[in-house]
Length: 326
Ligand code: NDP
Image (cartoon, rainbow, N blue to C red; front, side, top):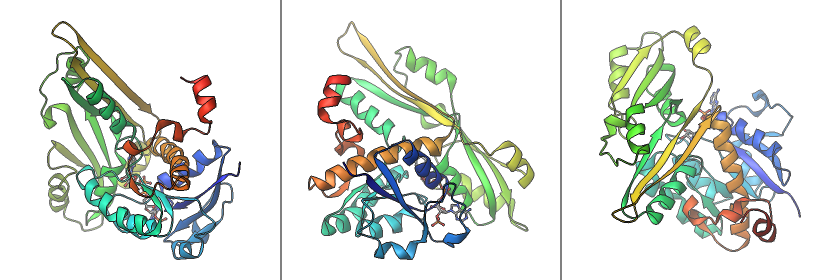
């Protein structure tokens, strides 16, 4: 059949990752990269056409699914609803506490326009969310545990970089090995947020910035840092460049439950990622395929990964999937 034509809205880590993922999916084609900056100034590896974001409204006939690669903190709350009025979309919105609000904001314009807008795909939210649903549904008498890291968190690093006075910065999430061992052993421990992880930030200040004000703004930031023990380390730009440029991540979703008084069951899903954004983008591209199919089937409005049947992610036909993977 015809290829699925994708656009990329926003060219940062995820935007570059989507470009890499399209190259691995022969049924996909990249139509254009759209940016709020000067498109001519982007360095696009294989010469995909670059456009200004303002040109998107003239390109609605050229793009089957627009992959939104903006930041969750400031970009997606505005870009998600505006672009869902014009295109089928996929985003990776990861401010968990605000997902219901984002869903509603995207649902109204998408429904009105007959578009399909999948929000909060990626790995968490995304693949981890699916594993939490499976765990709860299969083992109703049980506990779900999610651990992240050790890894660099895109969402949290993005949030740090938007604090006034911050020139650059990264955030690492570090899981507790004792906590993981107890969960894996089926002990069903009660763990407070603070028992499971700590957060560690490395920040480069702007000239003249007040380090204590920056530290306070970070450690008290709602939804991102206020429920964790967070340390903020101030470093120079050279140290950031030499020691903090790779973006590894990963983590675990466990469901530990009891099917009878005699038997405990433990489900474990884990990810070990050399590049968080490249993996996230690979997930976004698979979901773009599903969004295209769902829109063609008349399933419009906002959706989440819970609404997408797994077979829709695959380029293989239902017949092929039954024969090969069932
Ligand atoms: P980036 O900061 O790299 O990019 C975000 C936006 O910033 C881009 O769309 C781009 O918009 C702009 N931008 C990028 N580079 C520059 C630059 N050099 N100068 C000026 N502007 C720039 O974020 P990521 O791509 O790493 O992540 C995006 C979001 O993805 C995160 O906020 C996070 O919430 C989410 N995420 C979700 C995951 C999940 O599992 N659900 C996992 C990982 C990330 P423009 O081109 O228009 O200027």
